[in-house]
Image 1: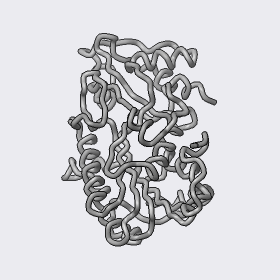
Image 2 (image 1 turned 45 degrees about the horizontal axis):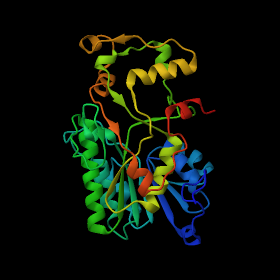
Image 3 (image 1 turned 90 degrees about the vertical axis):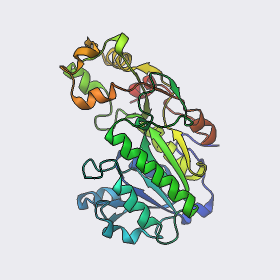
Length: 308
């Protein structure tokens, strides 16, 4: 049975010979690496030489390379038996609807001995606005923003790569990531600023996942994910955004944020935040728990936000 520290429990001895490549090794990547350290050889692609020391301290071998410079990725061919792709698409470029970083990575990985499994971190934003409906993975995607369209492009590329190479490709559709020990990982700073939220009749459902649970989902998908399968990587919480911030404010002993109507929200809120308030959905995580056999450590944001 899986343990609290490792969602797969004790890995078979043959996994010790495996090589796991992390592409985009930030907060979640480091947490995932900690779960399998000592069981696999850990490698991480990095374009920042200053991060090499930190990676080595965590038992990860840094590999210089830049997803925006495909020529630097040639050494990745045949290098890893399993890959976790956490890097976001670039925000600029003429082909704004394409994720050229993912395309470059997959070209490099496919040149020789493709990995046995690949996990791609996408976004639940690919569903678009679902008017508060419950959403499972069978729902057709309808990305309505450039960043969501780039993620949808990456999803299609990853799944195509899996079909033509035999790699088991898993796509995790991820909502808002939080954790008290994650930089900017709680609503506290926004509450201290007094940033408004929408009034109840205009409010939207929001979804979350704790960083630790997301890292465990990544590891579980590496070994348990079905071929070319998508998973909603969300917790069990069902709250509208304003209620979420009210809950956090009460938990922290801070004033609840002011409520504003949607008609005047643009006068009070930045465009990026407004875009999140334009979509409402409730993610169904049944497949995550049933197929990956993941038992959430923080099933509700109340458990995660209050954790030390």
